[in-house]
Image (cartoon, rainbow, N blue to C red):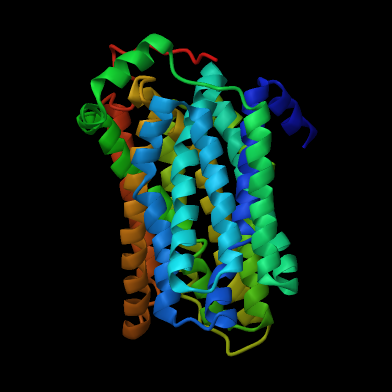
Length: 432
């Protein structure tokens, strides 16, 4: 851990602040969102379809606005979008805890989603600009802070929600309000090179979007990487469902699901920088991405192997079967993500030619977000079909095949040189 903080301190203040900001953003978000559905359906007594609508509006407003948020960041500057997103999430979270009417809940949910669309592309573009040639290492450290917030947030939220969900909402809103104030005061303003920014501003938004959509290597890379997000999301979907299918919904099932999240988060916190340094010394970015996706696909082999084992009726054997294969899958998924993520973020910058970086991140997030939605629908259908047909291996075979197919696609992009920077592009320095 000491080495981690030494690495962080080796960057300039803006990069350090962005990493701490991301930890705080995830802390505030994940202390509230896992408990929102229970509040809406339990405390407020809303129907299931209304709960789904409120949660769906948040997701749609975020995924649908990523491109707009990235474009605004490139035109206005990274700092204004980061601050605006945090202020908007402050208002959204406070409103979620204080209102009970459907229109107000929908407005608050949309605000929290739009907030993410505003600051996510800006944060990543800012980090890439100020990290310079150390982008890969910086994104590895960024992922450590990111996962730490995800790990700690639900624990804090559980304690606060035990008192009152409104306390959770107002505390999360307070965190974002404090974060907004700190960034207004301490985060330096950043944009791309002035001459390039003026040229981009004159070009027009639609022309910029058409140019990005004509960037075939970037689009191919974005589509190939959808699989990584579908696979990693199974820590929240397929793996908990499998644990509860075998272990039940009681205390054991709850504890085993908690272990999944702990394995995923702690392994990243402990191993991310070491894995990145090891891969960076041995592989080109495209090779690391290929291996990361292959590892994520192979993560479901323990679950596939477990389907060949007779399910005990009870006892230690049942507990082990319910907990160990999903935990191993979560660990391998985390390892694959650790291998791929820093090189993934760096590749987006390279394929953008260091131009309109936030807009590229925004479109990339939108493409992957749509892929996650479609992938989860298909995965839910596969889980239902597997249970109905008595074929428990079907979901795990599907996920293994998806990971390996994406790895093959990335290998092809790497072999054909499509993951390298455009020849005519030159790095554009960030300016205050």
